[in-house]
Image 1 (tube, rainbow, N blue to C red):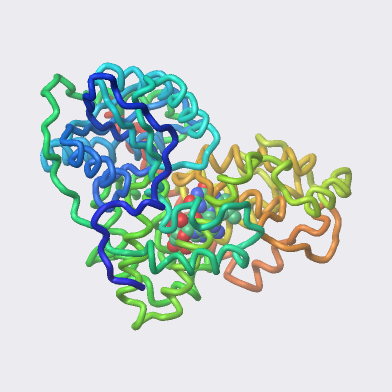
Image 2 (cartoon, rainbow, N blue to C red):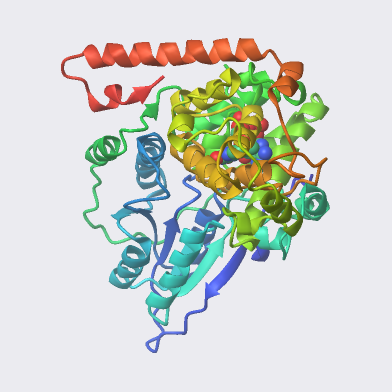
Length: 496
Ligand SMILES: Cc1cc2nc3c(=O)[nH]c(=O)nc-3n(C[C@H](O)[C@H](O)[C@H](O)COP(=O)(O)OP(=O)(O)OC[C@H]3O[C@@H](n4cnc5c(N)ncnc54)[C@H](O)[C@@H]3O)c2cc1C
């Protein structure tokens, strides 16, 4: 790995989505960074780029965030985590960096162009997401803004920018691994220090009533309450990565390669996915820090980097180049054929979505994983595969199975609505990034998993008992807060 430090953002890290024309009076307006996926101040290439561009043009810079009315079914659990992180970010960016932070509500394709017009911006910087809704939104924004506005998209999420890693839909980890590794010396480099903005934004009244906003989304999304164990924000994320008490790299890394497939050892995983999903930590920072301890824990670090870099960036590759990333149409031809060949195989047992959601199946292991997701908000990675594959086995057909898996995943997982989630469901149910296996009923050639296999791998009864205890504690805590005659909204709506 190179220990180079960038001076500013490498040309490959950003794309020009729209080139603005020079204004007739030659004037250059401010730079606005529309923050969406990378909600952090540290180690954020999009912010670095926005400030750098503003300083070069000697104009002010601002950060804007748009809170969609509905974003892929997010509930209190996910929105609470996000807004609490943004509240901290707002304070820090204005106090420490003196960059103004604007919060809008509604559709970004309306609020962002309106804001650009009001402040006379010349450059819009956005971070990168391969998800359909955001890409459409950016297309709309490019259509709606003035001719003179330039739009840059910066991949601040992947270590190797998605469009650099590969220019096509990759077949599997095997086909993308070499391409990513080849580019790592160029892209896995130290971050430059974020420069102060050289021109101040004219002071405007932009106070944000975070507490009312958070109370409002907690009320609207109360069906899936917040989690008490997962602290939001950049500092909390760094603590999970390398805190002195229980940090992943400092205290829990040693047995990662062995323990990561044991659902009874949830602490054996990094626990970084909520922070990576909301961009409260940069994957590049995680990789840089992991490299520093590689000599001592070679196998563990290499296994971690395979997940963090190759598998995660493969998920972005899939969603970026496959428009049907969340439907059967996105499966490879062999997988679609085998699934359709077996679509009318008898399902025995058969469960409705409601039975699945309430964990009412005859399989105690599956029920435990579903309850771990509903109550704890983060199902163990190994169980996610078993969980999704059983949905294929027990529902009407592959299309319904995929829809149900994505619906439940996005509703309850704190890290849901992520390319890794869509690809995880597509891998389990539609064989994406996998190969064909021995043909069998319902699954066809899709890889099969069963209870007996899990029993051979880990202590299934122990996991069921662990989840039962977890759920019991959450229910007890909820009953206690419900007893409170005047419960505070933040306490009443929190799961342990
Ligand atoms: C059916 C199914 C659904 C899934 N849903 C999601 C989801 O909604 N959101 C999500 O982030 N991940 C999802 N995954 C991938 C994976 O299970 C989680 O990323 C992991 O369990 C998160 O926990 P961790 O960060 O403690 O894991 P660690 O093992 O510590 O991994 C570190 C990081 O590597 C990446 N990673 C790990 N495993 C994978 C993988 N299989 N594919 C791609 N990247 C990976 C993630 O960014 C993760 O945070 C899903 C997998 C399956 C099979």
